[in-house]
Length: 433
Image (cartoon, rainbow, N blue to C red; front, side, top):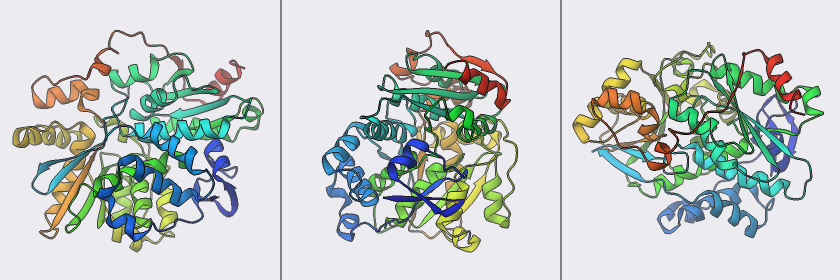
């Protein structure tokens, strides 16, 4: 498998380098040079395959002979070992629940698969790998769980102080071992900028073997495409199937577009955002204008300069008309989000988290002008208990807390506080050598 940089198509690497280096030397993101279509017999018979078999077939389609079948099966089997059920909520709206993994967030799929893939590529190396990851909420917890105690790999998580929920913070800061956390006085965009700068710092790269577990790494996006196939096998293929994606860094939506490129019959994608609305505005106007991120209740979507937007442009050769033929965007306020959480529960008894509620708002708005045979599946990206105060306040009642979250409440947070200046983080890293 060959991949190229979005900044220079002549800058190509193999899968191992793309996964372990994350970011191209020219600061571009890696994209597959070829996205083969899956066999029609596979696409027509998804219900005959288990989730692990789907993961294997999609991986094999992209990787070719890069990884032998036995090792690739082991990677898929060890990573994709929890469900992704489609749950009906309204007559024409379902929820794809992606929070049944260890950290109770959709990013478990990408983090666990990436951990397996990186372990495979480093199994014969004596050089430790240091993974830097910026998180606006769920990525950090998933990466911490996915990589905890992985031999030869250490993880350093950067998160914005005061901008993740208390339980999310505990997931980032209580595991110890090979997992360290830096609490940054700034926004997610600041954390992401620090990580990207570190990859281009020759001084750091002479002392560390750096990689990333953010969705800038292609190894995060590929497994996120798996659950679109898994969802479609549970849906009625005779209807117009639309997927609504609560969006921040736009990795999840990009993964859906990869699935469509591989032949999955998805009619439309809905990009649902909070007040951080740069992509919905681009879809409406054709102008992309990144902004400083705004803190909201749906904090994992608080991204003002989404990294994966460049990948979306790449898939459509920056053709705005082509992009808008497949993607429509909406954005909503915190007040609308809390009202929607209450409305969903009152009408259906389904408990949505703040991100899912943004998705349900967009799904309902889209359906107002859609054909009668349209069905929207909302990606429910995190368990509502991860946003306990917000959800219980919106519903005016207590909700159940999964045991693996509840047991975190008494654990001691361990994090290093840093400013949002890159030089402070660099000093922190150099002090660890």
